[in-house]
Amino acid sequence: MRLSPPSPYRRWQVLLPAIAWMLLLAVLPWWLGLPALLALAAALTAGLDRLAHGIVPLRRGLRWGLPGWLASVLQALGGDPRAWVLTLLVALAGFSLLMLLEGWLDRDRPRTTSPSPSGDWAVLAMAPVGPVAAIIELEPPCWQDAGEGVSDPLGGTLRHADHALTLADGTRLQGVEPRCSFSPGGRWLALPLPGGRGVALQDRRRGRWHRLRGWRLSGWHDDQPWLARDEMAAPLSLQHVLGHDDE
Image (tube, rainbow, N blue to C red; front, side, top):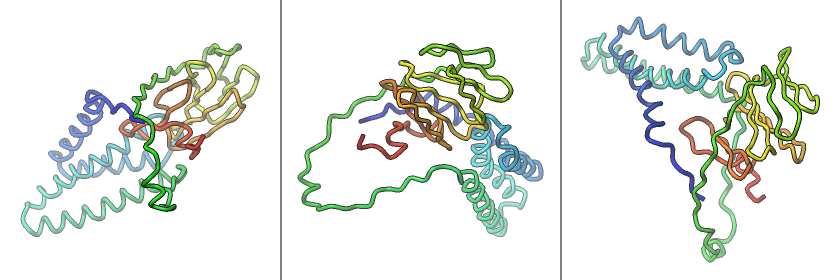
């Protein structure tokens, strides 16, 4: 199976603001850029449920802003060998703190383990070649505001009131945003978690719920959800995310 890569236009939509932010911090005085980076870090560590979809841009702002700020520090120190040594020490401390922050933000994400190599190599070498690669074209999700009610393809209406989402069967859900997206065939219902922290999926045929932290809905294929970590990551099928590739 082969996935279509993100379009160059979409990549530049993400890269151009990030590069502009890095250059801005590089030309600003270091004492102006430092409070900006600290403000981004404070926003990420406090009030995650109120940030909605701002988590990914804020994290990208720290990743790209830190090199720009280091460039301004180097200019302020004079650019001599002593300045390079001091700037490298500051860079080591800054990137170490950034990695600690990234690990803390990802503490609720499901961890995937790579399968260990096992089996007879001769058997693996003689195994038949897999099927021909196929291009997966995803249908983007259509998010609908449930504040005024959303018609359920299988009948009924979804409504969001009193900080809870009421499904067509009367089930009340809390801890989800007032938005929803149905798969083209109506089998799946997707609900974003607050703060961009993940997505909740309901398999309405089997009556199962999947609460996936750290994943975002990329689109639908064959009436099945495909998910990704962020905008730049390749989408994966739900079976792969859950570790059920054999199904």
